[in-house]
Image (cartoon, rainbow, N blue to C red):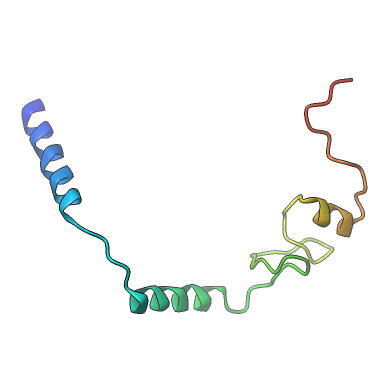
Length: 84
């Protein structure tokens, strides 16, 4: 059983190695069109433009960057690694 499993794994690895990826602009553009269709009609963050499912009360996404915190009115600096 183990030998069979090892043989199957080796075969699948060999098959994966044989496949060479080449960029295809048409395929990439088609996939990007699909992504755009999925995002169509969804709200965007007023600050960074990220497409999200839901915005907060300030019209922002869930990011916690300095600019997002300032826009929300949270002027307390981020406390990273400080001890009392």
